[in-house]
Image (cartoon, rainbow over all chains, first blue to last red; front, top):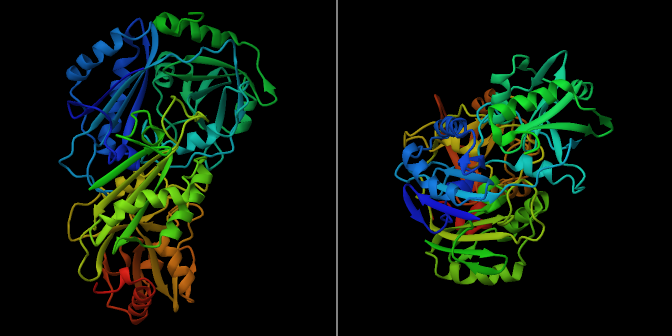
Length: 272
Length: 272
């Protein structure tokens, strides 16, 4: 695993113990699929990072500089890998008010691609709920204890993911993916303006699928859906085979969507 | 500022870039007043840390070992200082499921005591709300973006703190302190089972003041209170002089409470 840590543009050995990313989660991250030494959906990741940085008062790195720094990391990465990027408000001071003088911290690391699952996913419902917080919803920030607690609810390796409700009882997302349900000839996914993350793969589906839309979903909506899939920027579109006792057969609209994603972005071609 | 970082019991140079405290805020902190080289209210801080560690699946350091490590840090600290302790789930892996094999990270740092304010505090109402999240309420965890955003709402140095409402419109706390309001001959403070932090100073007040109790408070309750104070473990009990346009004169019950705190814990003696 290759890792590079920067304070501003200066390469440093490690994060500072007083980094605001560690102290308060005052930062953002992006998890990017690397295929054939290229960062897949990089413009979308960059845009989301910029939106989050504006919301959290963090200066963005200069794009050309960052891309030049990424070059050697990507060219030495395996054919299929994952780039993780963390951007924090930086190190200095103690207390919630950030010192305007401190520079952001950037952590770049390249990891092996996680094992690809064979066939449709097995899901469970999580008991941990996501809080309603419009000020942070949509952002891929570093305050992820809800997902950590939800993921700690099961150890059964036969279960790949868990669906989370929000504290008002509506479906929010999976711990590390967005969710779409096939209901009435449409692909519906919960809005992310009050909780959840505005996923890059989710955005691709909404932009490239005429019958996809945002809608609030109840657990009953999900369980009675014709088909269900999860998506994220590392794994693409993942059909769900079962959720607790409910199971689904492959659905032609879902197979079609996966083929279209694979044509648009070969890194996600089914069977790669 | 003296700092020591440990992986398990092993002293290391710095936090790992893959630490789960940085990646997800998977950790806890304590901010402890150091007076005459002693950690004030240490047993209460230790107990709260242990409660949080159990909730977040983090192993606690062995107490005698930790106290032995603290010894040199405290004895070389200024007469009045602040000890910050961060405990995280440790470094390793990528993804919300923690690798059971990794050891917790501990960061100990000693800081100068913040400047003591002269006289009563000036407060404002914050626009940033605290989310309702019973799974995390009460814990002093590392997911503190709500406080960061609330504290970033003002720069006027004449305003020392901000009061936050929760997303349901009830009073929650200040950005870095609990709040008590004098209403009907009692000191009332919001419960911390759905949001907020179970402050160590707050617990002292509730345990040592017969007329103190938990109660939900509306903004109107606070503004019409006879007196108001904030409290935390570094500053003790801080009378509030004004909140927006509302102002308060010194209140005898509040002066009495501060004297009693100073007798119980000399580090908080008024006028020290």
